[in-house]
Length: 333
Image (cartoon, rainbow, N blue to C red; front, side):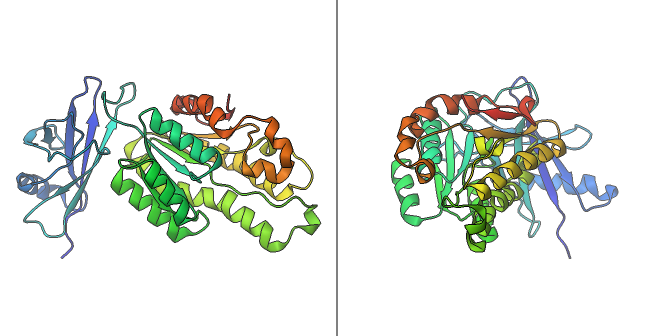
C-alpha cells in the first residue's frame, strides 16, 4: 500500500509569526480529517533559533496543535523535516518562506550558492559574502581546492567537489547543499572556462565541446537542480554570469563569445518563465584581473582591478538583487 503524501508549508507573515498548514495530496477528501489528527505523533522538527513553536492548521484554518522544535547547534536553513510515527514511510517536508513585502527575521543568515568558487571571482565572492554574514555554499572541480575552502571557511559554510558539466555531480552537490544549508536565496552561476586564443577554424572539436559543456550546459544543469526548490519556496534570485563578450565580440575567443551570448538569451527566456517572487538576471562582471583574463591578455591583465577589489563593490550589488530585477541584463559596478 502506498503511504499517503504529506506536505507541510510554513509561511512567515509581516508580523514575523509562523503558521504551518498540513496537506494530504493523495487521499480522497473524506479521509482528510481523521488522518489530520494523526499528526499529533509528530516528534521532531528543526527550526530557526527564533521560533518557539509552529501551530498546525487544517485547510479550513482550524487549529490542530503546536509543534515544538528541536534546537540545532547553530542557525540552520529554513528547510525543515518532520517524522510522523505510526504512518510508515511518511516524510513531511516543511518549507518556510517570507511573504512578499516581509523581511527575513533578524539573525537568520541568507544562503548564497556559488559555482566555480575556488579561485578568481568565485573565491573573492565567497569570502566577501561570508564576511557580510551570509552562509556560503560553493563548488569547484578539484578536491584539493575544495579542501582549502573548507579550511578557510568552516561550518556553517559548505563546499563540495562538482564538475558542472557532469549531471550526476551537479545533482549530488545540489542535494548536499539543500540538506545542509537549505535552498539558496541567491544562486550564482559563475563557473566557466575559455578556449585558448585561436581562430575559430583552429579550435578543436573537443575544446569547443568542453567550453559549451561547462558554460552553457553546466548552467542549465545547476538551474535544473536548484530551481524547483526555489519555485516551491516562492522566492530566490538566479544570476547567470555573462561577459562583455556576451554583448560584443573579439577575435580568437569565438567559442567563449558564443556561450556568453547564449547565456544572455537563456536568461532572458528563463525570466519570462518564472513566477512572481523569483528573478533571473544576466550579469556582465566587467574586466577583472583573473587567470582567465591573463590567458587572453597576458601580463596586460594586470592593468585591471583584482578579483578581491572587484568583490568589494560587486557583492553588495548582488546582495540587493530581488524579484524586481527579473529579466535585467546588468553590469557589475
